[in-house]
Image 1 (tube, rainbow, N blue to C red):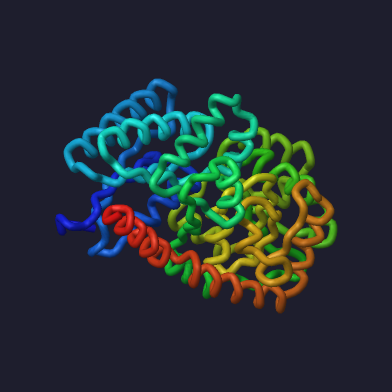
Image 2: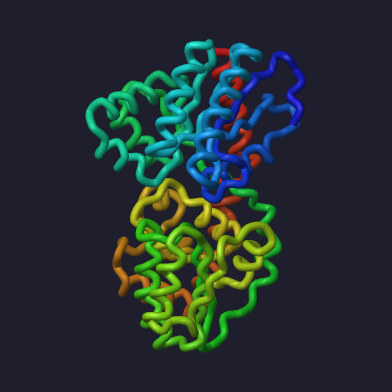
Length: 365
């Protein structure tokens, strides 16, 4: 993207490094790749990386200086901050305050499945800082209508709009043609995400024996990071090694291969924003078993393009997986519905075009 026209908005997008694992990075990379050639000029500045605390501190300092330098040189730049809870809020709210003093216009893009919990459990002074940061921004971006309502409760005077998370739908086209049939005694169930209680992976491990009792050759493929050692320990303790394959953190062609092998995608989360893994599974034509948390109910409708269970309901989780493995017609209908929905509402060029309109509006306002 060139953005050479001096009349176009000049944007600094502040986010984690483009190599950091997680949903925010996926959103940023999808947007940057999807902006058209005549879009505003967008410069990405990283303020967070994976690694030791000292390295993270150095990147945060260098990134903050880089943002302020860009604002000073460019004048009237828009600063688009991808913000989550805890340390992310502290870094981004400080940048927002300083950039605003230098004349920048501020967009706060709120991620983080637990941002509402972060606000609720914060002391009054921090709550006031969160409210002030949101209300002083020119625009606050929420991931779904549910998140817009939550953020409006925190900051009643904030200007909040919904921008769905993007996914590069065309990248997943090869998975639609290459998927194998479900074998009579098996099937492949895919989980991708951070291993931990919030994503429900321990509930999934508890649900596997009931599924395997009916389908002895069923395979649960699990890709992710965080509490990997604990998951491996439980797999051995519960004697699930015959039905579980650990993938590590998967990206690129390995991720596409995992989606192609799978027949169902499962994400039994307790808290979510709008999970990229669910959107990618939909783009890959997979029916989804998930929970009604965060923005998920706005993209997954029970019985239409997936099955919805309550968080922590292990029996319902195993029953939903078995139902989908047993019903090829239901899987086919859900597959078609998912591809259609994600292409119309979440395809990266569509989302990026909306964001460009907002950049222009803020720039000219």
